[in-house]
Image 1 (cartoon, rainbow over the protein chains, first blue to last red):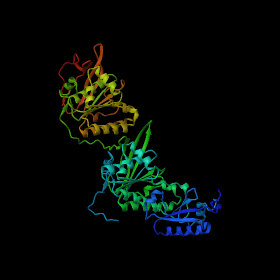
Image 2: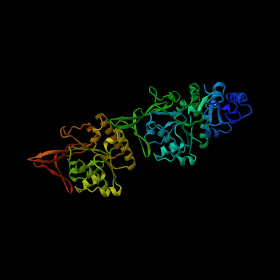
Image 3: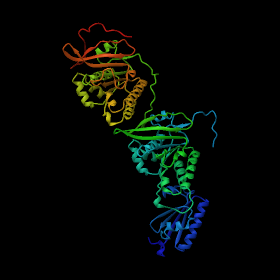
Image 4: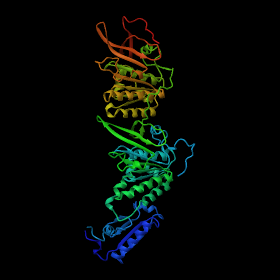
Length: 100
Length: 484
């Protein structure tokens, strides 16, 4: 599979589901920002959804684990769980890097 | 943890409302605690869990939350509709909340630490949205297929059960039977309060569903395997007890419907609530005696349940009309209910459960099982005996008069019933071929009849267009010996 970052103009729309200010949620956001700055600078948006404030969305969006990262764009939709501390797996999961 | 008051002896329980199950659990499932229901595929665990929830919402004013991991809400609604429950309406009325939790590993990459807080939020939401007192998780094992990190899952499961207890909901967790454990993922490790095992067995081409309470902490419960049935009205479990000899006994008599037989039985007929066995070789007129009895019961305004295992109701009605016993009017009046089925269609236990159900629904004053011998052919002697024992026990406890017919084979001694039921039977009529001079005819005699002086004669048994006639046998015309 070709890595998605081949098209430099492509927009990245990322959504991170968290539960309040838990350490895992905070770590996930930090790691996500760092990766995006490094690989997708200027062409990404991160939307953080705090499920403590809106638990209904956990049901609607089929969230079980926290934190969960959903790549809404580019298609197809990708889901990852975890605090993104395993950068290698996170990049592969988001398909910023090709799968080895 | 709240301290339990020392005087609170018995564990609070949440009734299931499922016929029989509350009897064997002595009141229901442990209230505010989790119960594990496990069993192989197709054993009915999802349906049992769903019924617990639905009955809670409809019968006990306890709303419920249904968390399904395998089936979508629509699929589940469809499944329980077959049991006569309208899940959609209950959701509409805010009595039940459904959340379908989908986990598929192929979709999920794991990139570091996580927990299942999302699931907890959803459980909390489902509980709060209807004020749930009961919750079903069907089946939580799916999580193990969805996530790689077993250590996280196990610690989260532990947290989950704590969460459920803290919320005070009565929970039912289902799990697939494992090879060497009750569930594949060892859920029993987390659910220590109550474990119910369901089993679906096929012996000699007939299937029997059974249930066993493996564990119920802090309470007594039935420890046997109990057969259960899933039909158009949901679950019913048969609580089987040993023969209890503490039935209320009636002195009232019921006519057999044949004057000659009544005459042999102290002139009054059977005792109400007793068990009567009519045995004989093929074609001796057992069914005719049963039909006379059924007609007599209904003629006096009683209700009779006629279980025919050899003939269809129409056939039986036609045949009995030929001897002047018209069973059609009582059927039309709703006093006589006929039910035919093949003995081999279900296992023995299933028949028993079904009989229980029919008796409970129709509430008959008398029941005819014609013949009981077919069951013996389809099962082992011990099983048949224990079934008959339970049936007799059940009918006696209700005060229902029961008449069983039994086909004896020509070869074996007529008095020898293969099932050894004699001790259960109060009145035993025997039909046999007799030789009168040079003619061969049929004879009837009373082998025993408890609690009454009865005739010891053999009477000639004749089927006429006007029913059964009993005649004195020549040379035997002396007075009936009386026995106390």
